[in-house]
Image (cartoon, rainbow, N blue to C red):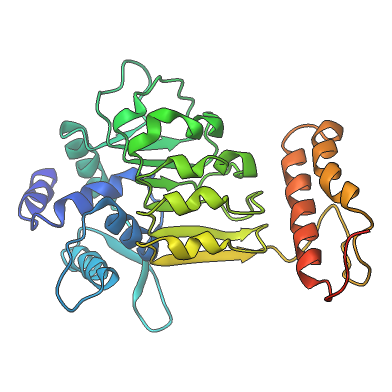
Length: 307
């Protein structure tokens, strides 16, 4: 069976081979969203431009072709019958992992117990269900994907080694990204795809995002953002923005009936909160306060100023 399936991979058109191997990034039995996969393929440069067709349409045709060749299996459909997400059969995944290892295409921490990881890793997949205290050379990493609850600190995302990073996918990590984690996002000049977990504690997009002229996809759904900076309009390659805000507050009750009490309170409270609240909760409280403060400021009637 393995030989037959390996032969099926061998006879894949050249443009579909990296797309198929790329699927080995995802954990076993993990539902892979079509939209996510197509956008990542485009960001990685796997999708070739065709005259008269949008890049998304070409990427979707790749996805459909892999389904038609039974290389991936549909697992969820849209209401109009189009495949929404897929999974890799265990045998298919084993083959993709094996070939990826031989070609040094994808490296996964899951299953790698000890030893020295290979050099020149291009696509790194970190599975948080397994402890991994490996020292990686990140200078060649093009995509970094976190799943479940990684033991690695997200602070490592600030590493200058990640200068070649094109894809940063934190959507399926159990760690919630904070404002500090993306404070230097402008330094990743090659970044094309950024997706964070729903409910992350991000309350504004740094203006340095204007430096990411290659950025194509930005997914910040259900964060604490109330406003997108005008610098986003300067991104020449931008094609997909998914941004929404949480509508509830857990720690504050904001009202727009009265103006803010004082500018001093607005400026100093976020600085004091981290010292009063310990652990990850401080990031959530500060982010929620910032969201409420920004929302209130945007809704104040004209003529109302800070006292």
